[in-house]
Length: 184
Length: 152
Image (cartoon, rainbow over all chains, first blue to last red; front, side, top):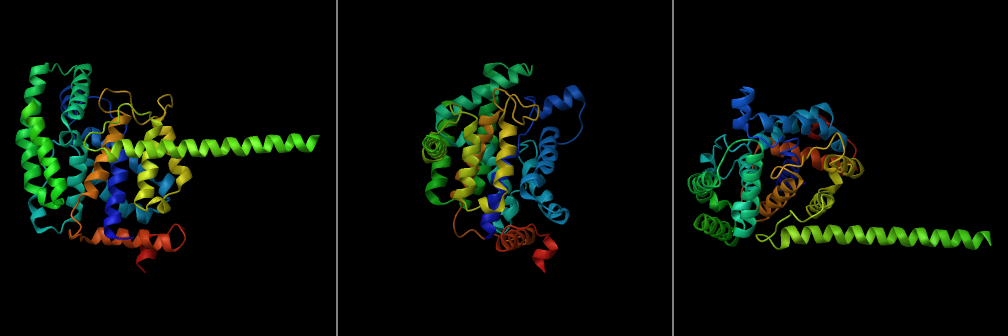
């Protein structure tokens, strides 16, 4: 098995299990209402559940779990956008785990790199979820927060690391993102 | 008389199994095409939750990873997690964080990995160990092996 295949293996498993048992409330709401002081309460729950489930289909022995679990945990925890990803050392292009984290984070918010109709479906769903959870966000406030998120965070992170992707794909991601920002 | 009845039932069962297999195969192919081939215009919200299972298995097979899984157990696990009526259901019926989101992220990660530059240098000790572990396990015909055994 190649290293790239390992990366794929962890990434696909991470994508499948990263939001297990998500209760539809944000981490911010958990901190404010429940007084939960942990950094990423929702992601931590997904990690705990995933790690419990792995032996059932991977048949890992305890020593293997010891290797697999920390890599996998960090992968899930990095999907909490509230935690800043240390991307500076991507410049050296030697930190595989950071590539993995980066792809995982982008994958989690992948609709921003897709066409506007797809992006709208997902952002509307997020708005509905926030409303259902009682976060009291108006449509205009949501639009403004999305604009700020895409402009100040996603664009910056993508531009900083576009060199990781092949030319055509990088151009496609950047173009879709800019179109979505313009349409907001 | 008894023999011909048995033959008819047997033929019917074989035909039904064949149709079921072809149906599942078509479903898997359709899910993968819908979600990956048309990216970035793909959206998974119109797909049946079963498509997640199909998609996950298809992607693992596509990347040559299926051999590292106990496929039967993995299938059973995904069936439980995606069954909204199961008390062990892992994906709730929220507007955003639901099974379709898992499917969407799975497709996105697959797409992002495929578009990573081919000459990207991948190098960490843990990754190397994991590669070795999984590689050894594969060589041993899928038998479980500890990291120590694999590194020996």
